Length: 123
Image (cartoon, rainbow, N blue to C red; front, side, top):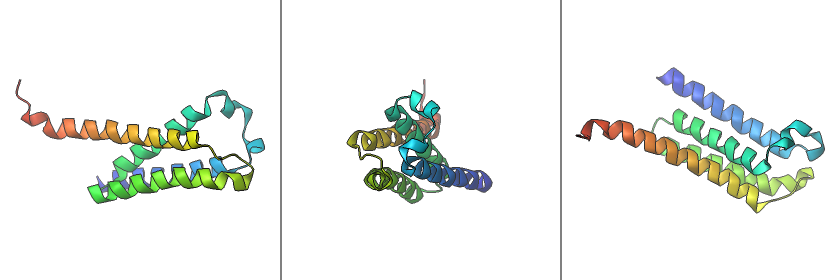
C-alpha cells in the first residue's frame, strides 16, 4: 500500500511540474495539435487528474487537504505568472482549474464514502 501511495505521489509531482511548464512556456512554443481541444477542457482535465492523483497519494485527511490546497494554489499562481511569459491571465482558466479539481474531490470522495459505508447498507 505504501509503494502505491508513493507512486501516486510521484505521479502528482510529475503532473504538477508538467502543468507548470506547459502553462508557462510562451504560447508560440505550444504545438498546434494541443490547441485543437478547448483550453478550458484541457485545464479541467489536467486539474481533475492532479486532484485524482493527490487523492490517491494522500495517507490522511490532513495530507489530502495539503494536496488539494497545493493543487488549487498552483492553478491560481500559474494564472498570475502567465503574463510574465507572454501569455494572458484568464479568470476562466482559473475557474476551469478549480472545477476539475473539485470534480475529482467530489467523485473520489463519493466513491470512498460508498465503499466505507457499503457494509452498513441493508437491502
